[in-house]
Length: 113
Image (tube, rainbow, N blue to C red):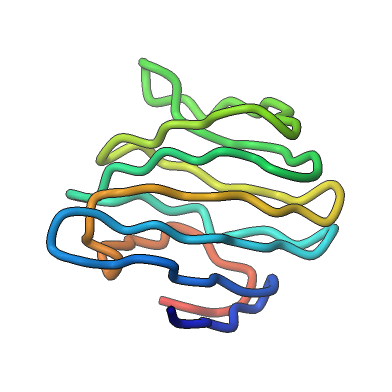
């Protein structure tokens, strides 16, 4: 297990091997991830706790905002732009293909590239 501190809180890498990755991710209320996409990585997110705003491309490539709550599932296939903004303190689980370094940031509040 590995803990990775992030500007918005942290990721706990529970499993990471050549077939899949499994992470527990926590966000502080009011914080958000970068607007990003992945060239290869495919991820599925289960929200355990909290509410968040999700920005994600629709089928026409337009960014759409929706509200997601505890118990909801979000899927981000490759090339889909997405961002999470925590309305409350949020805890979620992410299962994905193993390419954890496959992040293309379009916008980032923290100056990361």
